[in-house]
Length: 218
Ligand SMILES: C[S@@+](CC[C@H](N)C(=O)[O-])C[C@H]1O[C@@H](n2cnc3c(N)ncnc32)[C@H](O)[C@@H]1O
Image 1: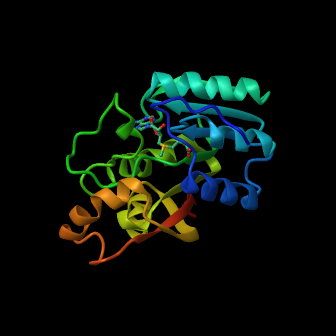
Image 2: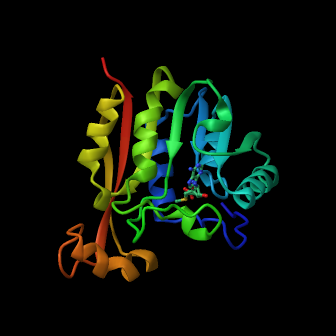
Image 3: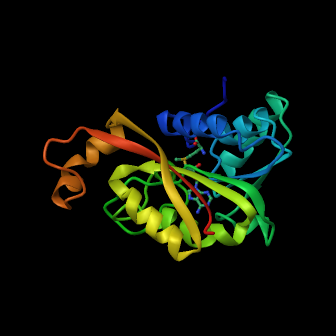
């Protein structure tokens, strides 16, 4: 699927593709009300629409991403409500059958998350978990009783930690997909720092992408 991607907007990558694959395999989008958190250019929102979602809402912090996602949805004839704001903020108290998230998850030097630079797309705080943890804490409140969260991130951030944090928020989570990929340019430039912090082993040049699926604990 061809998507417009102006400077400053996340170009859909392997993490996007891995989450789309999990989405399609799960069959969860059909007939569902779907929320895409951190939509970037709208790739996941469009995939959900194509997979038969009853409605798709997409949110991003970045004006440029919101405009791009709107344009991409228009060009592909998908009816998606794209809103600007912080995570679940723009959807108020509404609950969704399916929440998709490919959040910023690359460990960064600083805890300050950039709001206006493209690094906003990948910087996830010192351990990469700042945005992931916020999603884990808030997701249960935004899911319908049988709702599901599908989230992708790097194994460097700790899939087990995600599952624990989801459990703290009342959701039972499991890893449904793992894919090993070579470090991309951002991970390559940070490999030394990640090694010093013990987040990767010396000489590592690959990471695992994990897709975590979570639903209300029984
Ligand atoms: C890794 S990109 C994923 C983009 C797209 N979903 C994809 O899979 O290709 C993360 C996106 O989250 C957005 N983002 C970062 N922090 C956010 C926040 N607090 N609330 C909403 N969106 C945020 C970024 O602007 C960026 O577009």
